[in-house]
View 1 (cartoon, rainbow, N blue to C red):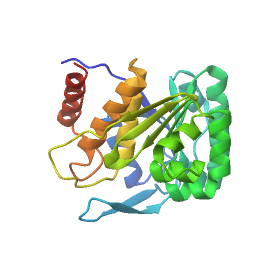
View 2: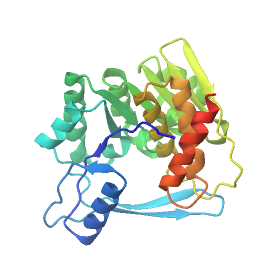
View 3: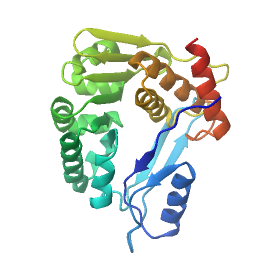
View 4: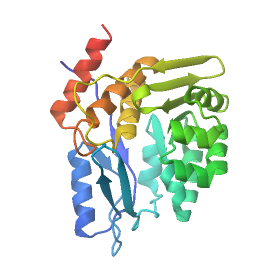
Length: 266
């Protein structure tokens, strides 16, 4: 079965150390264009993920040089030629990246590129809620957050209600809620519940499930699917990721995701 593809680029700061070289190779091996050149003498950031038997995880992060997001002609040119710019909420954790967020979003708005925000982490939302709310209200086209992040952002404990509240400020909002599925809200009148995809295996590692959902949702939207169908694809992606250790899918697993999605639409 032939499936459509999308071109993906990533901007971020890495050093000229062995870890940076490994990271750059792995990203490119996955078909992602790494837009930023290694920085001489800089230390590449790293994250140690600790996973418990119940499939939950915690992270030990060393940001390294990641706070210095390169803003050059290649970076802004990529924004101009892209359908979507995805901003990670984690970027607010490093003061130096705030200007990069602002400059990137301004350029995207100017050229008509969709601005997508992922809330990233509930503690990040709690610390930078005013800044995130301002971006959501003034410049964001699509917001991704989980139930806890949506609660911190809107004050609504119910994920469905939080999605509806956020959608008053942002054209399209997605709130994920683990095994309870996800809620997709647009405008003031449309709320869709997308059930979690039922898998025949026990979750092993939830690290990356939210990112996998967002990737599937964006892939669907970029290929002309409805928000509901895109939510379904996101759910299938997330389900596949939690079935093994690590957040990456092998090519065969990705193909299985697309086959499952195609069958679900029949």
